[in-house]
Image 1: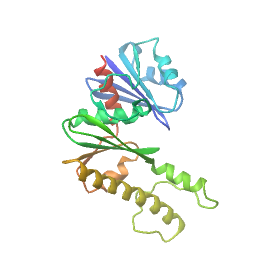
Image 2 (image 1 turned 180 degrees about the horizontal axis):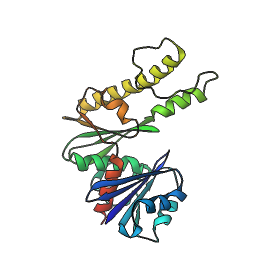
Image 3 (image 1 turned 90 degrees about the horizontal axis):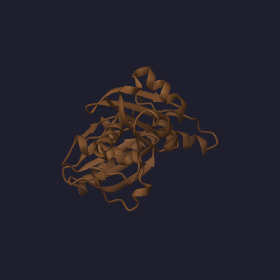
Length: 243
């Protein structure tokens, strides 16, 4: 029997089918209406034991209602039992993706001081201690958001995209200047954040996740790992933890 994890982000709704703690199937959808038909194409509905739904964009209950006729559905809430200790001042405003990423990191690397960096529409930095205490973190615009903002809030600058093949300290034309300015700027931000956190927390391990994690993992000279599905692993752990 499968655990179904549904993670609705800012750009898509992702479904993961877990079996014995491992991902066996991944499905990406754009609309809520696609979820059930897409799922039925992969596995029989009766093979799913239970589900957890987390959303930072689409109405969470709307997604949960799709699956409730078929199996038990757990909706993410700050009131759920968690395998970590939340020290955040306003846990009710803490994004489910941030919590899940931290839980996923602690599950994979227990007993370590961890800095979890999730780079997508936004980039988040979250710190959890070797005692499993989540202390808080920072939120900053992600790569694609920076490209869009520079285009939308200026009169003539073009809308560009990430170009991981482009390297250098500065650009020699507008396209290079924008691309390197954004990419290098974000790299410097991450590098500086990692160094500062490492001064405060001994034996720090950095865990990258999110759609843009590929871009930074190999450019940060520090003890780090990349896990693109860290949020999904965390949500599955939360589902298991709540029985």
